[in-house]
Length: 195
Image (cartoon, rainbow, N blue to C red; front, side, top):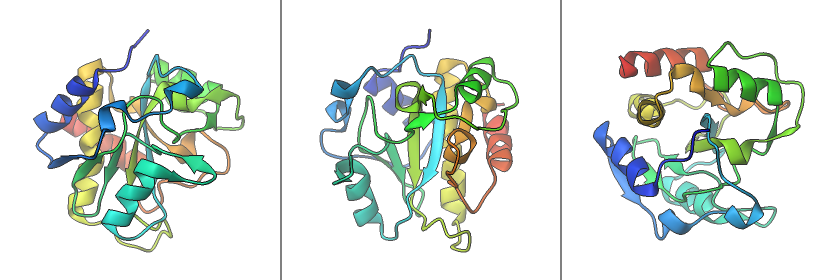
């Protein structure tokens, strides 16, 4: 069983890796825990926001929208590479995913194809949203790609390797995020940082 880090430990882990971190509102207590448990956690899930504009993106991820209340992740990474903490606890980011993928993440093995939506991903993953339209054409600035590695400190604190970091598209059929870089390249960057 892997309990989630405390909010303070999560913040400390991020700051130890050197990014600029912004604490947004009551992020430590802003969550969807009334909808179910958060934990045990087994990995980090990466998304893109399908938005433009940092302030608008952070606000959307913090508050959500009529069909999906916030927080929509734990951290929003804007195109300048800044990490905005918007929630902590259960967040509406992963939705239902594939239990075979979750088992592979737990075992830190190669991921199988996702073909089911039978597991509560919001319970088992920390989530980072990256500000990007997700059209596959919009550039990912170098600062933001470097910030994709910011999942590494969470892995380091839990004793996980790079296989504990997945994209939404690897866990839920029909999802395409993140689009614009590969999860294989991301895991390689995280592996290098963890060394």
